[in-house]
Image (cartoon, rainbow, N blue to C red; front, side):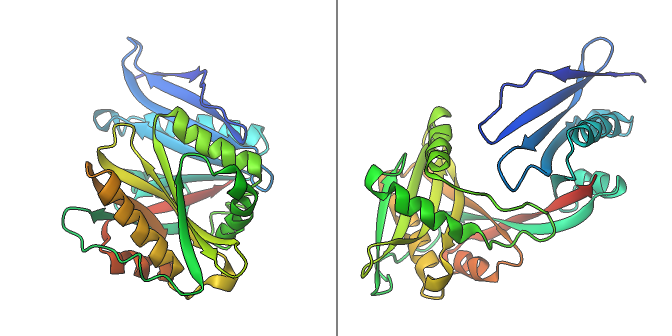
Length: 289
């Protein structure tokens, strides 16, 4: 059977990336599949791009996915990119497709969910005596912005396997832009931060994004502690406070979702201790261009 690819105009640009899109369709216009290629433009990531490719199950094995992938890789090479990343659930058709097309496994992610109806209550009161917790919703308060931005470097050594993901540089403008992007979607950003009492400095943070209707599952966006302050239970304390806050302030939220690299054994242990349970594993694939 024949089909055609159409390049689409995609409005999902940001200050740190832009996106190309293609639609595969039958001659009569019936959609068969899509591909979205995100080209990162932030310093340290201009060598990289990310692919999201989907073909309707009934239309697979007729070359649609291969054609969409070829269009995306050609565009990535033309833009001077060196690596293309894509993700698929372990054992899924996408896993097999990417493997068959020369992608290599770069990182394994453990996806987990905390069932708020059945999980034990966290214990945020057990914070290390040299620290305290603060929290806010939406954008970071002005008086904390500079310090919170500095604390974002806690993510710099996050395990990323062989994804060649690069290092994300954070400044105050990026912190505010990230919060605005969440708000523009109608969602609610909640942040818990760990503060060293003696210095008054933020040394760690945990972010959670709640859906616009404040029901169903919320998504963790990141939890990290600066290296000099690790092994003091701060990551667990911050996540436990997030659990307590969600249960108290938004009881219609039924679960919290998180994903963690399999090499990040410390965070996996924190999640397990709080009652998060694995739902599936996904593979981050890389294709060298």
